Picture (tube, rainbow, N blue to C red):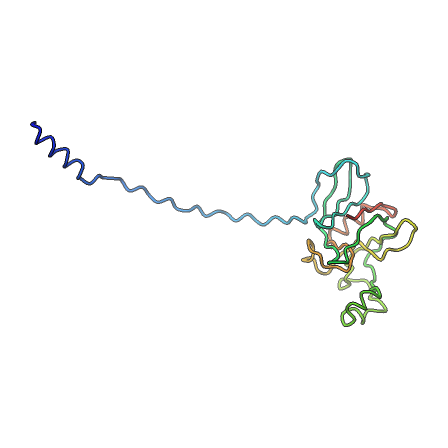
Length: 192
């Protein structure tokens, strides 16, 4: 092959279309939608080991209540907390416990929303439509006075994880029923 023929062959190889086998396009794999995990379902978790076993610790900004079951271990429950200026913080003890509690709005609640709360000024009997739900733990201060703050169930389970209450700590009914069975009167409660 002379030089001219080699150049023509080279030119034809360069200019010739290349055969590329078509690669099948990757089909997107339909991802199975993971069910959205409910962060407020009761779950055993690690907690600081300095909280006394049996105590209740509430971290309002995170919407969690912890029942300390062993050194460094707790059952974590989701809660709703007080809205805006109504967030209650402090130390208390469970002064009494009630199944299907009756409810009476405080004078401050009636003053803030008379149309909503005024009709219940004399109280509402316990039952499935009562805003305190299935159980209530009444919090008392160090002098033995009722703080008017409750850890209680709710008729609005979708409120858990939000700042919506008048200061009380709401739990889903099944969660507060579980907690109610676990804690005796006198249990220390720390709300942060």
